[in-house]
Length: 223
Ligand code: SF4
Image (cartoon, rainbow, N blue to C red; front, side, top):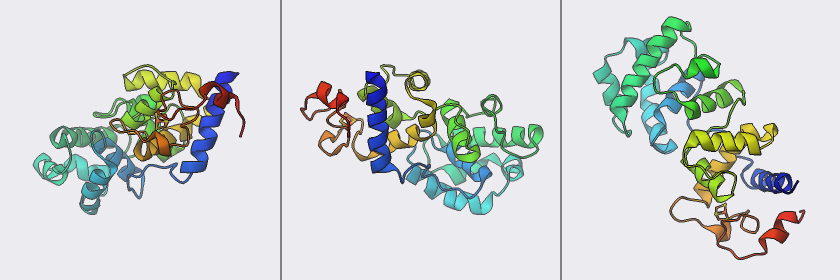
C-alpha cells in the first residue's frame, strides 16, 4: 500500500511537471524514419542523432534505399555519431531483413524486432511504444536507469534488469509514459554526475534526495 502511494505520488508529480515530454525527441516523419533514428540513438544524444538524420532522410527514404546502398556511403552519412561504423553495418543488415522478411515494413512485434541487427529491448520498446502505441515493456536508457535506482525502484545496473523491476513495480497504466517521464527528470535534474535535488519535484519523497526532509512523513502525505 505504501509503495503504491509512493509510485502514484511520483507519477502524478512527473506528469504535472513533464507532461509535455511524453514522446521521443528523435525527429521522424514516419515509421521508417523512427526505426532508423532509434537504431542510431544508443550512446548519442537526441540532438546528435537529429543533426545526422536531417541530412540522411533527404537521401534515404525507404528500407530498399538502405538495403541497396554502398556501405561506405552510409558510413560517411553517419560519421557524426558514436559507433557509426557498427551502426551503418546494423542499419544496412536490418534493412535487408526488413525488405526480405517484412515486405519493407517495420515489424510490430517484440520478438520480430529483436531479430534485427542492432535492435535490443530498449530500441524495440521505443519503436513499439512510439510507432505502434504498444506498451509491452519500458524503454530503459541510462537516464531512466539512474532515476529508477535513485528513487529506489530498482537496485540493478543492467538496463534489462531495471526494466524487469519497473514492470513489477509500476502499474501497467504507467508503462507507456514512465520511460519518457524518467528521461525528462534525468535530463532536467537527476543527472548521473551532478544531480540537482533542490530543483527536483520529488525532493521530499526521494530516498536519494540531498534535500533534507522528513522522508517517511512525506511518502504518506497526500497532495
Ligand atoms: S531528489 Fe535528487 S536523487 Fe531524487 S530523483 Fe530528484 S534529483 Fe534524483
